[in-house]
Amino acid sequence: MMYTRSADIESINQTLAQWFPSMIDRILLEDSREGRTISALRIHAGAETNRRGVLFVGGTHARELLNPDALVDLTIGLLLHYSAGTDWVIGGRTWDAGILRSAMHILDIFIVPNANPDGREYVFDTDRLWRKNRAPLTDTACVGVDLNRNFDLLWGIQTRSPGGGITTSTSPCSDVYVGPGAFSEPETRNVRTLLDDHRIDCLVDVHSFSELVLYPWGHAPNQTTDPSKRFTLVDTSSWHELPTDAPDYQEYIPLADLERFEKVGASAAQAIKDVRGRTYTVQPGTALYPTTGTTSDYAYARHVADPALRKVYGFTFETGPWTGDAEESFQPPFPEANRIMEEAISGLLSVLHSCACSIHLIGGQLLGAADDRLDAMRSVRDERLAGTDAGQAWIALLERHDAELVQIASRDDAFKHVAGELIALVGELLPSGQFDSASAREIRALLGQLERAEPSTQLRADLRRLHLLTRQLEGRPVEEAIGYLRQVPPASPR
Figure 1 (tube, rainbow, N blue to C red):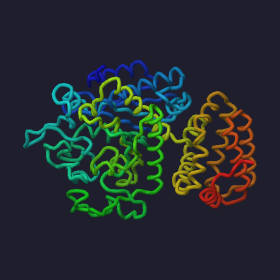
Figure 2 (cartoon, helix red, strand yellow):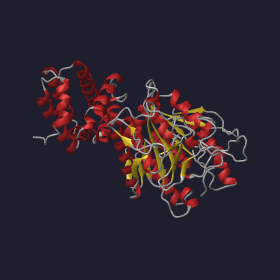
Figure 3 (cartoon, one colour):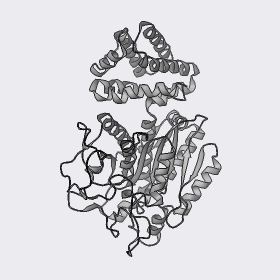
Figure 4 (tube, rainbow, N blue to C red):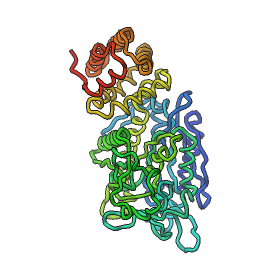
């Protein structure tokens, strides 16, 4: 087998949009520097509107040939398994048909399989280790910009690895050249356009190699205690190279966001490991080496620089291992390439699941609960419960039943109706200020109806835990009830 040429990837995009017109919208983006077509696919099912989005980008670095093919395979797999209503078995990991269906109905899934077609073609035809795009540069014979240094986050500040190597450069001949200006390249503007135009909550930029799941920040170590240390608040005018010019600087990230990055990353790493046992490390980008102007950091930084913009949880996958040979690591031979692509697909499906989140996965359009109530519940989970061990235990109790709840809801309309009523009631309690006795009795009645739907032994036990919880919290103010959940983990059922 061979890796797919740029024209063929674009042809596949066109064909899929023609074959699945109700599930795919093909979005034409800016052409590449050399005039090649670049398109994104919006994948979705059902009639729901105003969805959240997830964006997957591949091929940013030209020599990493595997990842655009993986995103093509992901697209085809989602369409075929959704259409057939079948589970997706990837090595040792099975993705439940109900989970896939829910993701397709709840999310807009945006995929840019081949963000840098010019560079990809140059790899095929001329230089197997070419990294950049093919932008002509003024006043130099050198060509190309590192697209993963061209985004508007501390753009133009060089970075250096602990070993001394330059990892972000203002030299046009460098492999990590930042370009003549932030967003100087159509290929990076395309990502910005998708983030500007759509309600995207999560982004994964898929790279090779090193078997990593990376999250922000890339320019400095993370800290969660000093909000004044943010790139928008500190004077960066003297920063020409990091960490040299600010060796002690650490970038602020809210604890709830850090924990969500770690949790989503860990779930993705587990989904990858389930395929055939390979272990991906989850870590902040700077732990690999310092960088500025990267895709995933920019995606997350947008809401920091402009609070009017959506928060986007940005990740980078580094697929496949270092084999001892650069070309083989960037372009693994088949059939090993297929195995690595399967790992990447499983990891990306995990991100889909995580970014839908159990609250929206179970309570969204599938069950008809109003979006503002779901947002309030998600806020309590992410901003209040996730900050303590006990709160995390309650989150884990609820989220371990995602797949089963979706399966039961898909076959049992009565269960779906009851679950929707339960979620709506909980969502309405949050702004009311009081967990009154009438609401507690109604919740217990709904839990009892769910228990009669023949759930698994574990789900039945956890429903009983929730039943007990309502008695413990009945009559308390909502704030006091949330405080209880932050301090007291789930009890064993009676």
